[in-house]
Image (cartoon, rainbow, N blue to C red; front, side, top):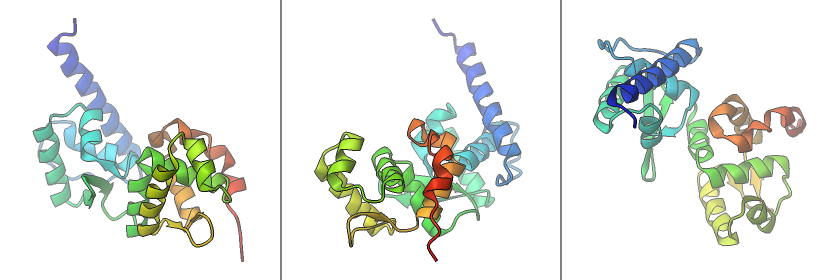
Length: 201
């Protein structure tokens, strides 16, 4: 049986870990929250290492209550430590001043497993067809078509002649830089980066 004290200590350890990650990041900027809690620094650290994360994911990973997370995020936004943008049903968070609008949109889609899988597959195999993408990702062709339309509308994909990632170097750089936060499907990509980057004068 898990005791309340154990849960509190687990939460404190999680907050301290992400606060330390944030402090080690050259991109993290911490505000003076006036709070003795580790939560503000942990949130800033988490956002710096998981840019594009949405509210529920951040709250759950940091073991925060909804009101607690909302309070600290609101304060950090007011202090220009983090910024956010609406993405459909989600609100996604980024370190303030670090990413272009395109990069923010890209990171939002890279946080969605099917969209990320499509982009990763197309970076590896630019000639992949819709059927091949569906097979690779174990989804239906209509699902691939729907995501392709969304990615095209977001400026991440061209469908003029098959499927093509519109800014492959930028997308690949984001994937590699934050590979640890995306999961196993991106981990192997780092070793392939040199062969995936193409110089086309």
